[in-house]
Length: 150
Image (cartoon, rainbow, N blue to C red):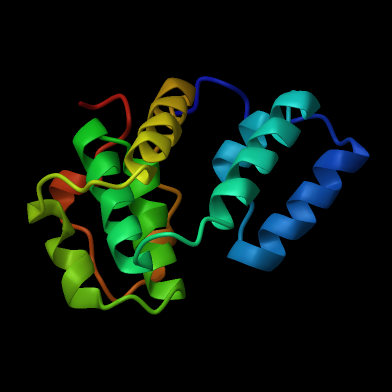
């Protein structure tokens, strides 16, 4: 269960964020619901994530696998859940995503960002939102633990 309410005030900014999230991801993302309580924090996170999305250096598959490895090492079930959905959305090879947990160290700066996301989501008490349920690559039971179950 989330430590912060997933029902932010219905401001104009929040309604726009809900619309975008549903349009882009098919659901309103739980981290966005938490950030919705503080508009300045929400906008700062949006700027961070949009900036990272523009990074062109490096192989997209390697970057995504690095994020997945960091998320699993930290134990952020929300991040792993969303990561599986995102891999499918990006048309990344399912066999390589399955093997991501066996990979060791990846020299990619995104590990630090994944670490940040995972720790924030774990701090919020967020767990899987069900994105991986719509994917070809199933999660095993050991990776479906909540952020606080570690």
